[in-house]
Amino acid sequence: MAKKVEKIDLKKQVEKIIDKAENAGVEHNMLFVTTLKRYGGMLKILDDLSKDIESRGAVTERVFSSGKIGIGVNESVAVYNQTSNMANLTAASLLNIVAAAVDGKGLESLNMDDGDDL
Image (cartoon, rainbow, N blue to C red; front, side, top):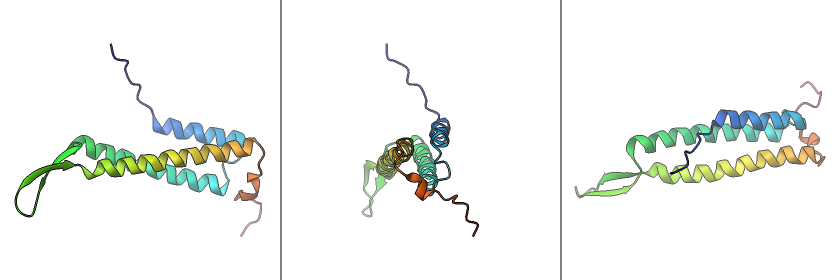
């Protein structure tokens, strides 16, 4: 019998990353904040692409200029794969930022909250 795949709540995963960042003291770090924002955008894009693939299918019919009908891969599949790879790298970057702060590698120099009001 196949094991049921548990659905992952992406919002909860992002909240876990933020909790780790708060514990490490980098939740206001410029690099962390901008990277987290990009990661959130990628997750939204992945969700939209996933919906498109579910509704249109991974394989679609194509009508060529000659009028012939052929089949092709839904272009959302390639974009989904590329975006997934970039989201994975971005998540790894977020975790590296947190880990570097925990290890004391000096991320405080990048902190946006330096007490200087512009």
